[in-house]
Length: 419
Image (cartoon, rainbow, N blue to C red):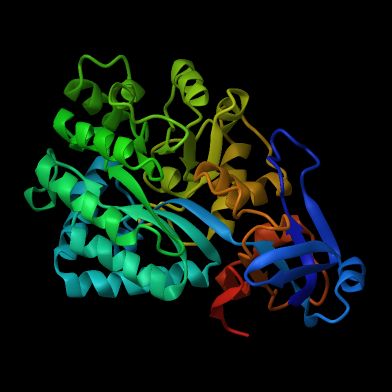
């Protein structure tokens, strides 16, 4: 057993529905044994319970739960910084040509290695990842994630129309490759699978039927895709599916919306869609930096919360501006301050969005997301480089960047350590 002594912050409940959900200890202790959290409380209390445990003194910094990114693209790491584009132009001119390069397995392995190192260096311990349009590249991501020790849920990205020809798959091939990938990681530690149509615009009815079949055959897998991100995208989806009442109805028709679904963006939504998302138990991955960078719009957070729709955070690399989940939480705060229907997020709500909310979205809240005893010991140790005093959570969320992240643990295993 090891006790980590430090300032500690975590949110064991939904901070939008439980206002006092933040738990904080100025002189706290996190007791870890065999990769699990045994206790989280004031240091004196935990030390009295376990007087013989080894103590690691980290009082010059703070401990937070591992960050959980619920929308990020592994093949897009090298297209960050493509400013001045809207979504569909950005895809055509920058992103899809880069994604096509991952047909080269050597290049895919290089990108996968860089990708997982960046996740760990930014304190992200769990991620829901859009992999590649190629089975080999998707397998390379799983291999790199396992080697690094990250908790990653990902899958082959499915498209069979309206993209570059070298990114398209026949539905039959997509089904076969997806089944093989699911079997290749089944039962593997810290890895999970998601069925991932790129978006409705690039998937035909037969491909959406493939998605339905994969979900029905594999009840443990998640479903994730893009949804209501950009006005022009929504208009194009309406043209391709004239029978559908709205964008959500396309996915509903094929049985793809449930408590296993994480839909990225939902910037331009309707009351009807919000109500149906809530009834289904689906989640929305809010990507504030990407929404701003691509000019997609400001996410209507207050309306989602009012309709009881689960919301988590995603960096959306490479439409977003980096891997940092604390930066994403800060931008969520900033953009909601100036939203048409503004909402002032508390520090507790920002931390919740970056941690436990992601666990809830991915149906992993029984395992990760906070420091409740029995959960996995996924945590981040941050140390400010210039501040000789204890910092409030709001100060940490405002000022911290990747240089503050000194150590990162998944199930008590160190996956990043710079002192």
